[in-house]
Image (cartoon, rainbow, N blue to C red):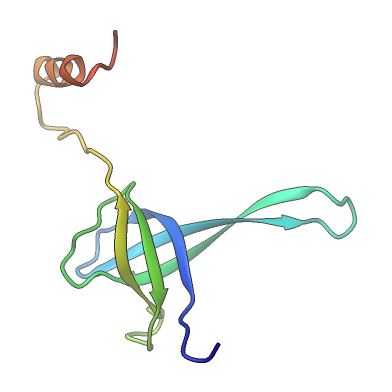
Length: 105
């Protein structure tokens, strides 16, 4: 079908740059000689207009026109968000947060 853009579902592994995320896309490949499946990871640089995604989020990205030397994808949707613990919180506050959500019981 003409006009269909490719989409990939992956995990955000870097969000340091402004309006840019790096998404790791994992896929399987069969080895030519040993006939075993092996896991491969491809990194895509994607445009995140509103800086919505953070590290660990599962996202859907889609093909887009070239926006820079390496950016050829854009963020379409955030599928699953990851709750991030602030490293500047005191250990007591983190323990209370973990107890509230059921971790460490």
